[in-house]
Image (cartoon, rainbow, N blue to C red; front, side, top):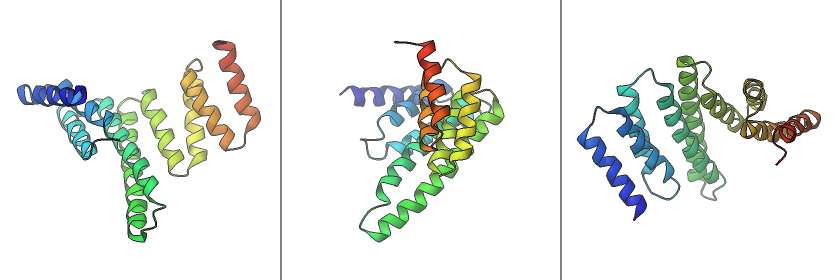
Amino acid sequence: GYVQGSIEAAARATQLEPYYVSNWTMLGSVYRDVMNFATGAEDLAATAFLNAIRLEPTNPVHYTNLGRVYLTVAEKAKTLKDSENAELAATATEQEVTLLTSAEEMFTKAIELKADYSTAHYYLAATYERQGNTDEAAARMIALYNYRPTDTGVAVQLSLLLLRLEEYDTAQQVLENIIGITPD
């Protein structure tokens, strides 16, 4: 009931004030949050964020929000790549590549609009990692970590990425730094 109420309220807001960008952002956010269990929500989220971009084309947040939709849907496609149905697996593989490319484009556009927008840098690094470009992902995460050394979330993600790259000493240094900053 709460989810349905949220969707209805956000949709109603866009009907009442279709040129108020925050309404589209809220609607897109609600749909993005329910994408994993509501059929078709990803398309509705993307449409809402595209409307926000249309209204505010220089706001990097909207591009990042749309990129996050693409990234999440790419993750769903990835789970279908191992399907026994060869056609479904092939379609999922193609869809994953396309969605990751679209996500990369959105995060890159956000960074072009605001070079120090750390959220876009974070998700771009995640996109690179999912594309198998772990060196570029690590470089971007290291730069982000250097920019925000007290952000424990960034530090943990960087250390996990470094562990996957088998750079154990560097990962240990990052983790020890986190403990030094926030011992709890």
